[in-house]
Image (cartoon, rainbow over the protein chains, first blue to last red):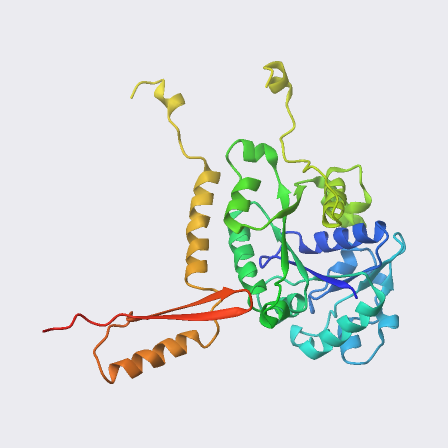
Length: 268
Length: 86
């Protein structure tokens, strides 16, 4: 039985796909057989971030419609063992995902995989609800910025009402906060919401903090999940996040501003 | 205000303003129940209509809330009657 994890946020552009790619790759690097699925039908991008855009032949919608089987549609990652990608369709619209079809595909994947990562589209419509419906756990990706935090709160409301776990009335979806594009220097100056502020407002446990970093854009330019560069700040942050998810203790890094020359001179 | 006060004045940081604004909108969403069942507004309207067959009540006479405890759901209904005229 696989564990199903949705990566969601409500707002677009906060780092859902980056997080999905790196979280999935990180789990695979830790030896867990993992598949990451792009639920953003019509606007697929996970394939680009994962660097397999030229290898997409069949996609998620083909599988749902029975035009291809999973074996044909799953793309095996060339860098990381145990990592597979299921791309979204570029030509269909989001109504191409049927609840029945999604359930059937997830059940089938569940037989073979340890983790299924669902990369949600932005918004709160069909595609986003499909991505979260069967989830056991959720990574709520949030930027330290008002519109992102508000949308995350909205998504938390949906996780506790529109998912299968919520509707079955048992244990709900386990929620994790992932803060991305964090700039500790600006937090120190009072220009940016701090981790504590976001935690106070959203009231869910923090799984990881990814600093604002040029390595994220470099990695997406190259089509390589940033977690593969563990020496880099963002890569290290994602690798720590995966370790924490697997139950290991890792102190939060990249939450303090680097001390400048002047600070050190002043003994601050 | 002396010129030194410029340095002493404790201006609220923009992050602090952001936090306060967010706390308000989030509290509002949670209390107005972004998680209400879809039938809620209609049920509320229907209850008002039934009440109005018998008594005169205002639009806010019916307050409803759902409380969830484990697998138990409780629908809490508060109806405020108009002050009776003796």
